[in-house]
Image 1 (cartoon, helix red, strand yellow):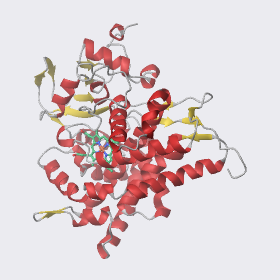
Image 2 (cartoon, helix red, strand yellow):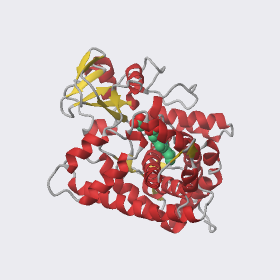
Image 3 (tube, helix red, strand yellow):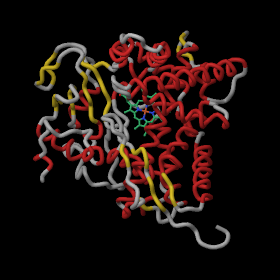
Image 4 (cartoon, helix red, strand yellow):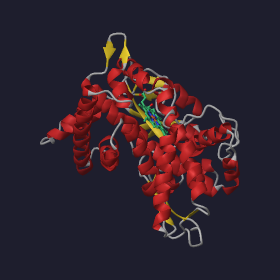
Length: 421
Ligand code: HEM
């Protein structure tokens, strides 16, 4: 069946086939109806490279998708007060803001989250990757879940280390990040996920509150101190904004980078011929690899905006309040923007892939994500020889329109033989 034979009105991006491989559905959407009203999800789906790029710069699409969502949830009788507090933190996230509030927060955060503060993380990231791989190998059973045993703890530890969280508290960081994801990604009927999300948020903000207070008493050489010190003329982040930004950095940087490392290793296992380029010591080669991983199977499937006013956009009548999914993953496979877009080619000349979005909200953590992935992917393939997907256990893909990532990635590898294993 050619991709364009798929009926875009009945194709379900959350059906099992599309979760495993959404790209045929994206191709049909691009070919048949690139600005598509999806009746099931009551949302617009934008899928071509040109339209997604344009939509990311469209001021009549707001990034503030949290206020209406919060109001719906909080208007229900008997709402847990913890949820109210948790949404208060999300209100301070720059990713949900438009200018001028967004401009102010972004400027201040950029003062702290600098290329220098990222590049000096290299030795720490290398050490964390080695430690996790040592632990896997020490188990001696030749099985590994590359998400649970490696990518997930690695990315949580890196952001925790950057923020200045002591080592013994890092496992709690991982759990909180997990819980908060239920709040941000949960849908309206998800009471239990919301409650656990609110609990995680309360614990994490309580923890960060103490950490910020300790940093105010005595400055340290880490991101929390830099956030407290960040100045733009007379402006600085309030105490609550420092905490909310700490939560945002953990949340925005953890699951996404976990998924880039996971999807990246998977793409290389499925295309063993492309692994040869990993041996190259040339940093441009490794950078090319990371860019291609982001384009070919990046973790941010979409970003969401809301329509602010009734309008005709690309010939379609849109109404104020309607939700719009801008499918970055589809734009990145658009044949009008990339030659042979479905071919995974780490030697491809880096183009303008949209894996980190574009425009005002372009991912602030892109240099950190690139650095972590460029270390973590080659380290796993180097230390776990013969790494192969476990034929006996299935991969499971996260059931969401927003992210592309595995909740489990079972694999096997060859144990070194000999007495000094
Ligand atoms: C592969 C990993 C990552 C991917 C694919 C990714 C993707 C994205 C995307 C698509 C956006 C735009 C959201 C929107 O337009 O609504 C974004 C924004 C953001 N990301 Fe990332 N991200 C990654 C890693 C990180 C890391 C490691 C951090 C920091 C620790 C981070 C921090 C942020 C922040 C603060 C924003 C908000 C920027 C703004 O609103 O101006 N991200 N990211």
